[in-house]
Image 1 (cartoon, helix red, strand yellow):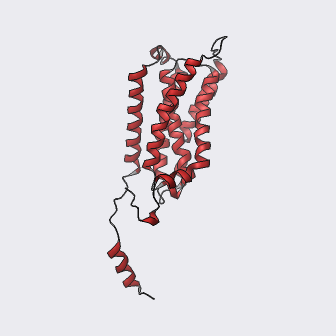
Image 2 (cartoon, helix red, strand yellow):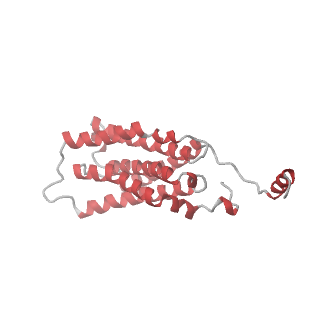
Image 3 (tube, helix red, strand yellow):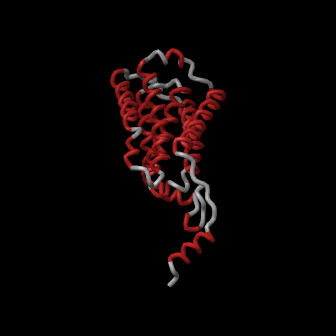
Length: 225
């Protein structure tokens, strides 16, 4: 049997240099910067909704956007924190207060302001534009977070995917509020509640598989860059 000092020397001689992951707050800030860039590009290409300035005077609308933005920020920070093994799972609760405010405001607006889309319902063109915004916002942000968390997140794939998906869903809801005028109750429930549930459900089903597919296993000598 090899002696402990010899084993240590052997491992040290064959060890490959690795770079430490940047602090969670720094990585979260980079992801949030990308989210801001995506929103700016969408604003340039699509333009803000015509009544955006007017709607900002509505406390419910302003509170909904602010709560979604705060939810996205806290959820992103939480995702990068809990991806590390030495951080407590209690960081999962970080975005909870903002999430409660966001969804509560949505529910309140639905109850007190039952806004009708119109007798013909929502047009196919508007539905297509909403879906395009959903994809253009959510897809790059989801893929970027997946790549950024590919080495650390496999330790807690479900938890990381849940809270990361919440961050993406919140940014997506902000984009829909900024660029689309339709504020019907059905749309509010579909995008502000349905989108987070969709992302969270997909995260629970495929979280571990996604991270294993994107990032090589540490056992194969990959370094967490």
